[in-house]
Image (cartoon, rainbow, N blue to C red; front, side, top):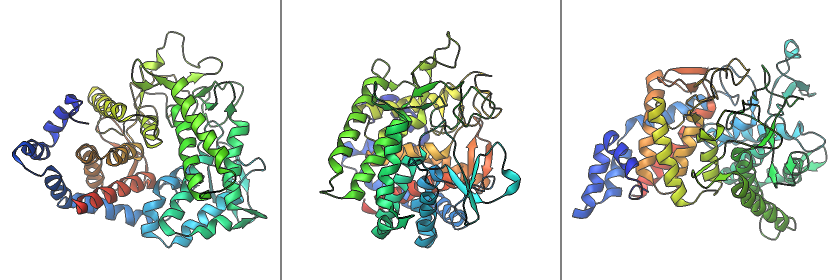
Length: 441
């Protein structure tokens, strides 16, 4: 990757001279991998942050201090590390609870929480369950179903417990319910003309549409659109479902066809070949933003990271992506590639008060929750030096504040919920992967 893109190399030279000095020694017969592995093994801050993640995840499965709900999009991203910190039964029960709330058409809720009669009105639309729990579902996004499929796959892969797939919920097995959830998306949120999943317009992977102050639910003002995050999440979910089905399953051929067509159409309609990036949105019937606004100038970091995980970029395109993200971080005067996007949407383009100002919340905030996924992508690519370089500022700030926060400002100040388990889970998993690589080298 570095040999193709000297700009990324220059950044690494500034930040991590020892690593690059080891790389320079290759011509002299030095062992670059051994030098980098030694540095990772000796980095005590990685051990510290990993232990911090375990300690936080032992404390529950809700998303964070300010979020009493267990959210499936969050649980999907911290379940692997949570299984290091908790008995597997706790994670198993949580996953099964989502199936208990599954709708009659197959849809999956965002999250559940203990029943609270004081919160029966907006901003939450809550559905009570006899067990004393209640759930809510935001309809502007479509990653609830795909997140649950991915989370079950991770649970089965880590624990080896395939019995969860045969668990019966109201007379219907979990294996069947997983397919039912994805069929909901193909039935209710699929545009046949483009062959893509649609949602309300949001900022990258976010769950807030611009047209209303809350922005959580589809309404008459919604501008339906396609984005790479939603469709990449579906590709990942189908891949995982195929693994859970196993070879020879009668439905595997159709799901394979669905996945391949989705990958093809994501590239056909959403990939901007000229600019080597994904379009923020392709609209079904007009944009919610002013006609003179060039939305395509925005680069979505989070959606790109998930697209890489789903195999929707080539090796060369991934190299270009990390170079672009590093440049965006410098131009935004931000701290990490967790920067949601660059540039952010201008002031007032989102009516939600958390989103209206640029570089706040999902409108250009800096999130370890997604920056850590790009680190994982780099590890998967075998680009360990870049992965280590990119995770370092995330690790440093976790140590500085002795915890994990939902998001960060460009000047690296924590915002949103403290005790944010999505950040802990993603960074903890990154550290596991880096340490495993270091032990092998």
